[in-house]
Image 1 (cartoon, rainbow, N blue to C red):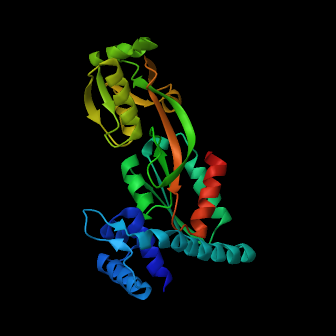
Image 2 (image 1 turned 90 degrees about the vertical axis):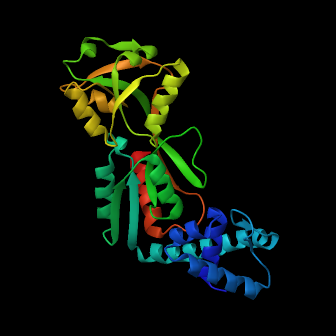
Image 3 (image 1 turned 60 degrees about the vertical axis):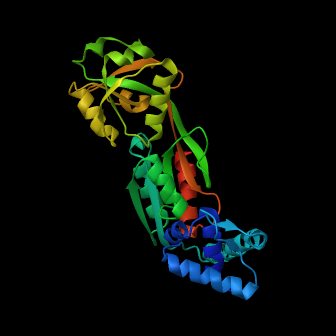
Amino acid sequence: MELRQLEYLVAVAEEASFTKAAARVFVTQPCVSAQIRRLERELGQDLLDRGGRTIQLTDAGAAALPYARAVLAAVDGVRGAVESVSGVVRGQVAMGSVASSLSLRLPELLADFSLRYPEVEISLSEGNTDKLVDGVRTGVIDVAVIGVRAEPPAGLETLVIADESLIGAVGHDHPLAGIDSIPVDEVECHALMCLPGGSALRAASDAAWAAAGAKPRVAFEAGDPRVLAQLAARGMGMAILPERYVLSQPDRLHPVRISSPHLRGGLALAWRSSGRISPAARALLARARALLG
């Protein structure tokens, strides 16, 4: 019995797919399948039911799964204990973030982490919440800043680190530049600029329009809120952005509050709730919780 076989078993059980499990552990699908077959032969029992549309655990597999997780956790514990004695954390760690986290102190976090752990290579990537959630689930990303949803994504643990209102932002030459607030149904009268589908902030604004029975015209979509802010400042329409971000640019943007309880956007740290997490990733998560939480 090998550690990698237990790791592959846990990955297939959690992903319900050989293909997704293979992507998560960075090997090919035939390799995952072959190693689990070897484990099944050694144990004398089928651990997976491969007959349905998704891969399911057999009774034997369900009985083995918690022990496989415990073994992997114990191995990580050994690594962590040794590294804590030596005082040196090494390796690579990947962080992801939605672009709408501009008001957070991510540069400060990364600089602080690099000073504390100079032996760790760290990378930062941006994407929408859906993409980042997939990255964390598959292990491509260790820790991510994602948009808050009504329910935490399955398989992930989250910690809310920001919660603020979404408001309109217009340039100082826009007809709304002299108005502080508008009713939610009045958004139909103005060209809107929003983040694209797949982002939690877009989902929050769409929910606000739906609750009011409004059907606004989205004239422009961009994945980077900085682009939306630049277009709004140039009079292209009203951008829907986090309040703190809009208020930080009074020279370019005029804030327009929209009367709806649904227009709220939040950010959360996300990491895998089960499976292996490296000491470097644990260190990054700890610093992120301390600085951003």
